[in-house]
Length: 449
Image 1: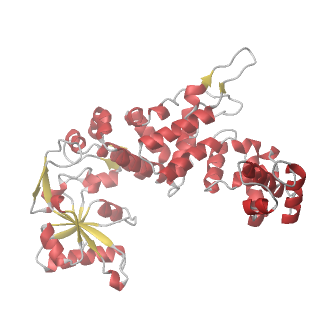
Image 2: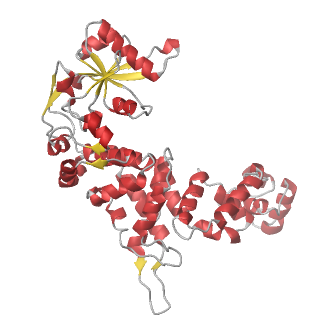
């Protein structure tokens, strides 16, 4: 069953049982915009226990907040799920995230006034297709406006993550943030530190991967959120670069141009790699020395790699993602050396995990500065023309082979096997026999000789 049909069927089951049931939130917004919703939410006056009784196999994911997860019957091949929430009104958010108490309500109008933004507070009656609008959401959708429901300052005080969500929605849809909502957002910006690192990370990742990263980070900057969340990135502003390599301007301009090139749906690690690839430039900036000198950023790659790792740890990235983001930063300048690389060096370079991300970061880096794609094209052609078995050939020798040749296991094995691989990748060694002859000639017939 299609996701929308399943959500409608959930509403139908609730209505047949005598309850109210509507599609609510972001899915209604997306339907009105002609977009395919990522998921569907249902609001009802049925209590969590009543919902759970109606849908055997449903999961009480947040019963204290009135939320039940209804799953499509897996036995029939169903994979859809819908969150069903009981109408509620909240009383106080002392922790800036969760309501201090929840009172179940009886009408959709009571329910929507606690939601974040008007465009996310629309209600759709599935059977008739009628949209219920109690907060002016349809008008704001038509005008392209992000407006808090009710008093903006109160909405942000209730859940600090809404500060980031306002920016993300404005960037994603190309909307303006309504004046009072914008004022309250800036006033509450420093309170974003009360939000968990994981939730901040996820929201920023969406901002990077939804196709409007440049606008999103410009709004983060203008709203003062960037200074609080990513001060290392905020320090890029005004850091000049050598005009012969970066005619576009300072580090912040260059980074924003690269962000603009990120496509919707790009990988999170690529997004973060682009954002942080030059994060080491501000602390390593050295002005020109003498009349013929130029701006320098000595070891900005090494410094930037460490900074990127620290930022990823701070935002609770997984170890794998942290390693990939750091690798993107650490390797982004290596493309300049490609024309001089030995075959072995180039093959090891393109064997980096998720190398396609390194390629895309380099392409964006070039297009956002000198626009010279010669090295990018060189690597692209190499990958197209070189058989995979030449890039990742089977090993000619193993440690066991060295033992059989009379060598004693030890630290020297790594050097010997590395030397064999180097010769193999450079096309100098093509068979185990040649590899053994090479080892015997270079290291002797047995250990100690």
